[in-house]
Image (cartoon, rainbow, N blue to C red; front, side):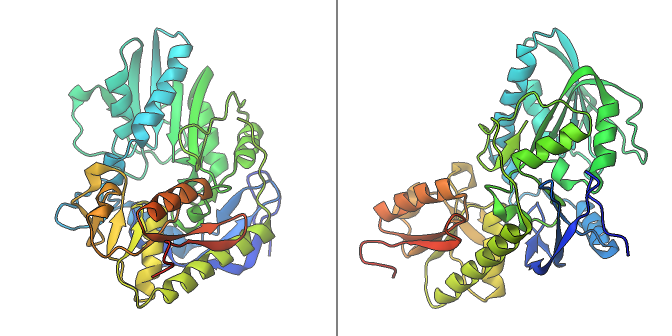
Length: 388
């Protein structure tokens, strides 16, 4: 039996004793299958794509619910609509385009989803004559009309997008979803004008280990492995920027490499630590989870699997307040003082942000816990009277 090959041509190694469980889809729905993890010496980590796994992915992509309204308690919450992610990214992209001092250009958002990014770029575009295009082979953008100034390219089965060429192409949280990196990057290379630029943002596995639990994130990158991949496919790295989100790589040089043993041990210990902590809180009331994104959803699924009740989700975005997520009320940090009964908060964030939030919670008399990847253990932040 031939070994699976990485895009760099090296053999992929199966992490034999590691099976990710449970998984969630990126629109925060449950994913029922398990995943096997493959790693390469170049640092790229990927999920093994069996026919069953691919079929299940396609089924969920076909009913992708990133825009679902949840005022009636339906799930998932429209996180991308409430969040400032696309506004921050569009500012970053438009700053780069403006610095090029171009008067007119063509821009394609590859993996455009529901057009949030293109809409933001269109709103802030005052000085450059940008012709905007969107392409997404999984989602069908909603509420589109010709007058919005965005041209949607049809879904195609070949790798050439209508033989069009673009000055700028963005792949914002897209590259981790593709099932064939070599083919996808070749298509993007073909669609790019000479001296054109590509903007890529992906989750950073080095700082965001929860990304492993996202079923439709097929590939996982660190700054180094992403840089190596793009260089091997003919792209020149002009800039890598971590300003937008600490858990993302956005094309600061930083050398990180994920080795098989580290990946296997860290992921297993993280999962087992959270399971143990949740079981210890089985008889506690007032349990809350900080965040309604990927990591928070994964922690909630663990809780449900163990039969442990979560009373609240906490989110810093005031627009999320008074909504429900998975039929659980969402409250803001500011309202915690007014909500009775919140005793323990689970914080599934990267270590820097988790420590900050944990300190803030302690100041108002609430205990918390978060996973520290440096010590490979769960950190408890008690109130003055200890964990209730």
